[in-house]
Image (cartoon, rainbow, N blue to C red; front, side, top):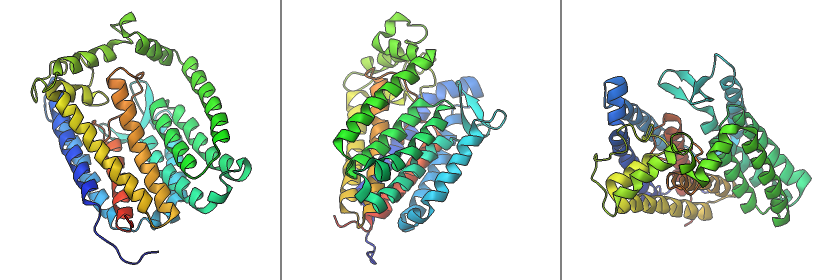
Length: 366
């Protein structure tokens, strides 16, 4: 193990802080009208987002200064704790239900979403497993099956809430990690076919998921119900043009686009800041992902490499899914946009994940 620490990756810190600052501004802009109407306080949502941002920044800088090898020791206990929380959250009277999903633990507006933290815990556990048993990853019995069994157990528990979006991000992230570790292409093709069949089964098992698919293909088939969000999102993005209507000048946030500060915040950003603003956000995410990839390539050990790959994959998948949904390229899934969307658990988790990346960067050879 390297004994000497270097300075953390400045570009990673800068891109993260810029995304966070833009996110706080946009949460206020997108939510002020709704918050004033519902809570008589236009700052209701942004105050809570600011609180979680502050907690997340503190956590990020603490984690940045605690050697990431500690995670290798605590990976198993963290996964166990997250499994316990996932059990608690589906118990009636214990877990909190919102929009048809029982995914939160807590009181009132201050709550956590255990499935969000399971993503990071699973990344740490899988990084430990793969770094210790990489030579077996080409085999099904000793490598692929043990690594996937825990992942799909967690996915099954998340689906009991149900939360297909978070579960999909977790499984996708773990698949990328296993692929990078050297799993055979033939095994991945077989798993992919099984995954597609299972995914279709999950969609067909719930009428609301079928409605989301049909509304994605033709939102105008049911513009007042299943297609409403996609249509209103496109109505926001279209008028934004090149430079946007101006910060704070969105029309769709006036009760047209439901809760625009959450999953569809990119639509409001595109409406107010236009193509230029949306492109800036994508550029900042690309910068963050680029630095993360360099950190993964330069990590001093396999555990650090797999850990960095998992974190970067998680962020990339969420960004692609969220913006794909907002622009009508994918069905609605309920995935937040990292660092920008309103949501305490998601924001805190992402900042903690960046803290781990920054810690790895202090030992990186690149």
